[in-house]
Image (cartoon, rainbow, N blue to C red):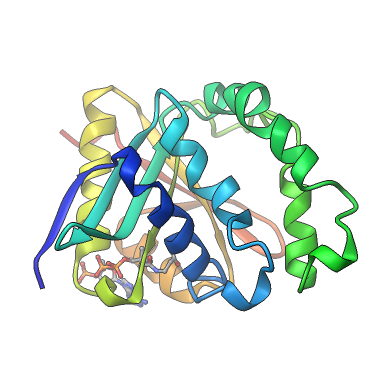
Length: 207
Ligand SMILES: CC(C)(COP(=O)(O)OP(=O)(O)OC[C@H]1O[C@@H](n2cnc3c(N)ncnc32)[C@H](O)[C@@H]1OP(=O)(O)O)[C@@H](O)C(=O)NCCC(=O)NCCS
């Protein structure tokens, strides 16, 4: 199987939604949890394709996208853009409370809340050192073959070039595969709550 890594193109947009859904249940397929197959991607993947300052790469086999890494180098600036340019329409599409007949799971109803949180979120004590954030998702077809590492290292190189000191991400404690991956990639715990760990990677030592 020939896999290639390249910058995201607009033509990849449908695949962002698809891959986000197929990996959205702590790394497993979330399709059965969503009546609206676009809902997860509207928050976790697609905005990065439109945000002017994002850094995004695609892993593709025979030009068919199978995975992505999407990143906002400055989470605060991204939050301001979300608030102004991305979320207003989605807040109307996904009202809170979310109508019962529109959802097939509690998770789908709860997801509507994400569109109503205010951005940027209050600044965290670690944020100046880890200003970027990312999402990475690969379909099962290319998992476990080193492509996640390559996507991550490709992103790091782009961030180092921009002199971004570090990046963070959120991961469900139930996603044991991703936790093992992030540990291997040198991420450490910045904070945690009952369900989610926030991990950080210091990029300053990378050249
Ligand atoms: C998590 C994910 C990005 C990892 O990418 P990947 O291509 O499968 O991982 P790689 O093959 O590049 O592995 C890199 C290292 O992490 C380790 N690793 C990756 N997945 C692992 C797992 N499930 N269990 C243990 N170790 C794992 C590998 O052993 C490898 O170590 P090495 O470099 O020392 O040999 C990918 O599996 C994925 O997208 N999963 C589903 C979606 C998901 O959970 N996304 C994260 C949401 S927060």
